[in-house]
Image (cartoon, rainbow, N blue to C red; front, side):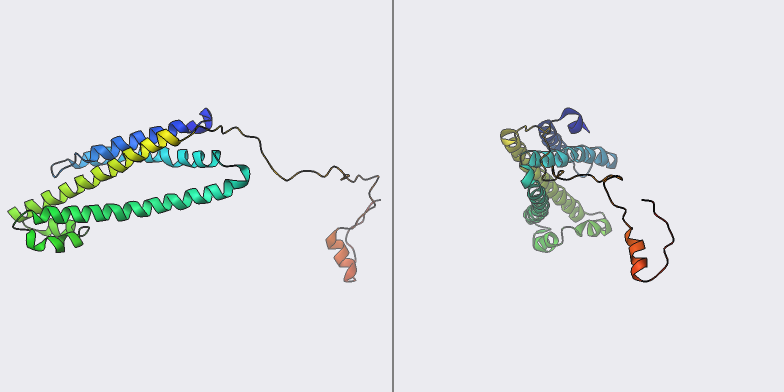
Length: 221
């Protein structure tokens, strides 16, 4: 709505990256003692930033393309957006698992099982919940939290880098462009009128005549 009213999109791209950096960066401060009611507001901040980015980048790509290239621009944007999401999942999972393995290996009680725990990092939450209170559980939770913090730090660094690139290279093209189309009226075409056009029989009635059926309507000349 803001882009439609202002007629520009560059502000949405820059604001989106700024809010995303703040939202993701603040998640780095989460630890094992963070109350659960802090999770939703912090997630909303990053969500608002990403919500500004998606339409903003879409407008930026389409505004910079010619009318004939608009379908290709929209397709390329969707492709690279999905590719970026896929790479984000792969990179994030790799960073988290390797960091968790390194953290677990630094504790003598957990070093022998570091490879096993890091290979099943996503399912470790259920394992940790089922463990009785002990020094081993406390160390696993600490390693898990530190690995998550490093993951969010990495994602924040990517967001800062992407925001700088967007600020430097995103141009503010006008969204108010004339419609270019090959459709139109032929100048030699004459619209028929009742005086100039002979009476015609609709297709359904002409079909009835071909089949030898009686006509159910009368026509005036």
